[in-house]
Image (cartoon, rainbow, N blue to C red):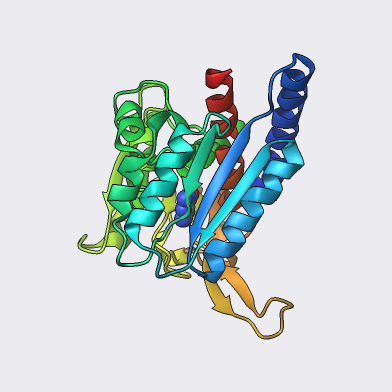
Length: 290
Ligand code: GUN
């Protein structure tokens, strides 16, 4: 039998912990945390993500601000807004939702965020701190994945792990967190140029799939008893649903699950943990500033 990792439940537990902390801050006469978000353009997934993040803030008692720009907004206008947020004492942390339109340099944007307000943990300073094991803001999705592993007491020390995908926001950072001292997994990162992905995946104990390719991980690639963490959230047309789409993970859940010891569903696995990690980073930013 396999265990379905209930990210929604863990996220809701953590949100309760955060809400309690916010109440304590309030009772102690401190301002509650304030997260701001910048959204450029109308990408439907990004709009949903940002709306959810704002809703999460309300749920735990944070203040929130959303600033929206048209898709054709110049990089300069966006960088000016970031400078404004960097200098605004009332904002504890903020994020710029990715991806950005092609004419805007994502790296320039990320580097312009004050690292002490970088609630997404994407700034090179925070990523660098993560690499050498210093405290800092962790990228939201890797942070959420590590918390799921911890709360389900999944053994990682000495186990073989494969991360499928090498993105700056998921694959690469999670590969580093998994190999940290105290976590101690042996990690392989595979990507589009890797030879024999199936062979490598088939030998490991823990699989983190983060490529955005629906159903990529198939049952015949997975070792009996493996732990499977599915980070994929591709929108697939589904006319029969209310929204007209459904989210598809990178794992063929139906056929892979029976071979697993633990597996995350999509939706309801990693997604809610990503959102809650952003709240945790914002809370930490606020506490450091008070
Ligand atoms: N796009 C996909 N995931 C994320 C995230 O965690 N943060 C931001 N800002 N953009 C994203």
